[in-house]
Image 1 (cartoon, rainbow, N blue to C red):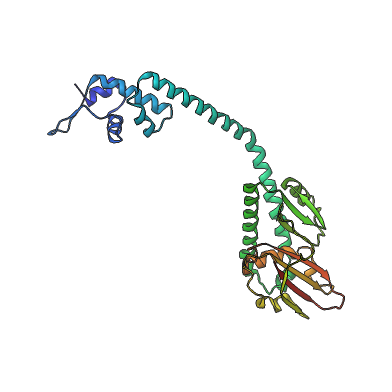
Image 2: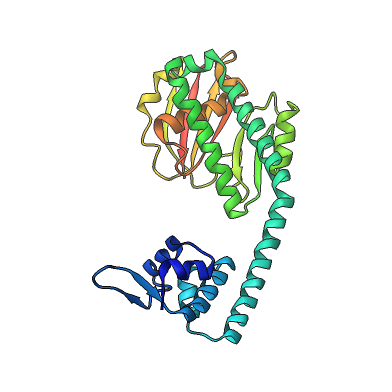
Length: 294
């Protein structure tokens, strides 16, 4: 037998490594003196140490190593071949990630910057905030909610593989890259409607058959006059907000639907089930509002 210090020198390691192997059940001393606690090893245990060390270096887990310690060298060679194949597959996957990383990062940065930037500009309208009876103390909550919803929307689209689309000026723009380009070039300015949707859940401009009118109000001056009277919007149903307003109202601003999205999401959880917003000029000089759900 040989002391732990001598065995460590024989194996080319330190005693801490041997104590660690003992603690995790890989290589126990041949004998431990019950009085002194000294550890002793058999010299031929050095072959077991070599096996453990090499399996560790080959990226086998502790549990995998335990299962291989009692096997002969031919079985061990087969296990190493399988590990080589596994590592080659991992290496190829890393190469693919390396090739796609920069392009994907730039695309994502472009999408985030342009779309969230566009939303931010649309919220920067004091008259719009006043229309909802909101002050600048609400800005952080509402703006943060818009960005949160956009992030969730992008994540869900990426997870499901659904085609992403945006409807503006009665035209459907499909694909994140195309949307980002349109936004960045300012080609969406003047849009009467801005709504981000999932590809298989296209929002129609007209109220669909079967939708139920659950609220209406006419003759109001500001949305804040009736917004507190709206029914529960977090009901999991699709909401359709119809505004028919007199000329000069902030509601006809092309950023208004985005503001609806922000306020209804932050204050009323209206995005549960989805929503769309449609605006038009009234022919009687009065403001009218209708809410449909389906």
